[in-house]
Image 1 (cartoon, rainbow, N blue to C red):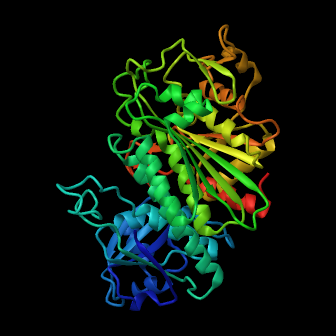
Image 2 (image 1 turned 30 degrees about the horizontal axis):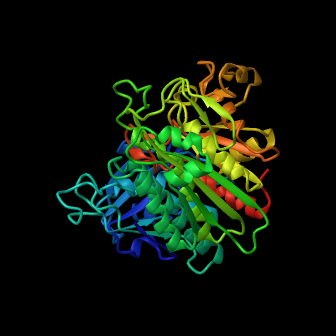
Image 3 (image 1 turned 120 degrees about the vertical axis):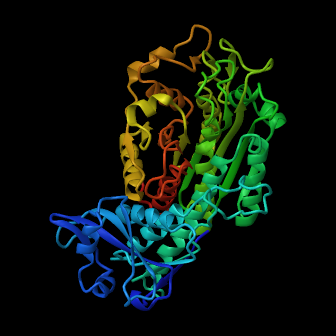
Length: 511
């Protein structure tokens, strides 16, 4: 993990491999962003012109490298685009800073030390830049090389991630700045842990090994961890989780991860879908749709990361994470289309499609979470391809049983820079899940499939409990090239939203 420090040192005299500056897209060309005045002076005030000559415009995601002049001790200047220049007396959006820092950190793979002189107007900006650096510098290399010890830190090109980032303009003795740096470090480290889990191959990450990882983290951070294995699930009547995991040699698990604060007045429950591999079961996925199904546990990874983050931050709220873990495989013992499962709630579900398995494991976990009567429940899942068709690959959908709660969750997501969109739960779609055999079917109308899934989950939320469902099927796994602070592969989508919801619950400002 990249080391972060705050410094009031002047950029010209700092010894580093590179100095990172911000460039905005102005009305008449690139504009050097605040914070880099000393760097601009070293270029005799002509840095913007030099950048324009090199083709820079200040557009978001743009990186321009140029040799440093004699007035700087660092040999390289890295200019990163911040997007449109803000209006007069306005500051850069924290997300623009976060993305720029992430792009720069990735561009500096192999460097030992870089000084960031992006505009830092307040502690929130420090937190944004710090998050961007730590998330942008991420790489997953556990399976590179002939032996695990060969290079745990090396990226694909054989170079290690940026080793140290110094945030110039930060106030190392200011309590708010230090707190922002500490928060960013905790959240980014746990988000990157979630990315590691999502990227792990399914032959190494199954329900049992996932549960063991949670237990180890629980001991490290003083969290209570309870793991229900197959025997305990059978005794408890968790028919949804058992039904999904019935076809796999790796038995399912339900993991409860609890963080408690002596000062807590509220309790937030988080529920995550944890299908460590999804073949579709008997309703086998078609060719070309299986290769990335190791990511179907992204919701559980996000919940795990959020609960540990809450503990590391010492939030004054009780946060319980429920990880519904199973592997969905076809075999002689697998659940068949047409089977009826009796869920933990007592309701029966006719399984019309075994590839609509996420809602089955979530249903049991939601009912278990509801039994504790938390102040709110939020579930997270890579649930439906329909949500990807509706919102694309970078935005997750939010459904809820309460409009004001859905709005609060949406605002929290936007605040931390995670694109999300509120979605409805149309009552007329509920009838499509009526079953002549059971209380409800796990499939309904084909059109609006993401909303149908939300309506199914709503059936298993305790009465009177505000609940929101985040369908992260699109942004959970990035099949394309990296962008901003988002890498290729597992992204850790929704972690920052969940942490922010925990903070808002602690302060009494949620909903």
